[in-house]
Length: 320
Image (cartoon, rainbow, N blue to C red; front, side, top):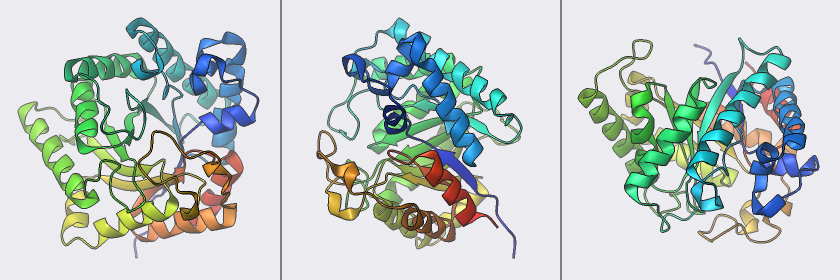
């Protein structure tokens, strides 16, 4: 039996940065680590520690550098570029240049989890392209993450396609295992593949012999239980896994450290107060990650509230 390569992804940085003492200045959330020069060292060390724990993929810290948080177009370009440069510096300091990929975050441009709050289409395309161009010199792959709807994911993908860098798309799920918009996971995956394939035909080009830039479909910032539902749904859909393999699209999941009792899976403006206090210990979370691998995931890790210690435990749990 062939042993597949499983990458370990360190995702959401905000809670880890707060845990390390980063203040939430002017409601900038994790972007405060970019805006204030004296705090950039906190971000640098966090990236390093995640890699030292076993992460083979890290995500740039520009998730909250968006119009929805109040950043101007010039600031978005400046701080997105800086987020990429800090990730590169951290990888060099950790001596992981040949073993860790840097994923450039293409975040929701308006409030996360709200598929009903959208940005003007052209502004969205322009903003994602600006983020992509700023990150381009530093990253190995783009990550359109915490996408609440198929439309949001397609917008991010379309915006950066001209940059000819591989793209992964990661959806946020609700408590029933659907996208936050209520769309079916399986239908959304099928439609996303069709969309990206069609675009590849319209704009011929190859990255490493692969015309379709879509290289991963993941699920993040969601309850581990719901990620399990999503991956099982894909696995049980006739022909879908084979289609993903034929197009070299990897599956993955990086969830939050919350349990199904926290109510955090409901479509709300924000997570309910105290949701992340429903702590899931390392052993339990790592078992979820192992189940995801059994269900076809090749990229597993953590998002909100998952510190380096958990990443290390996950790496051990899924090691061949």
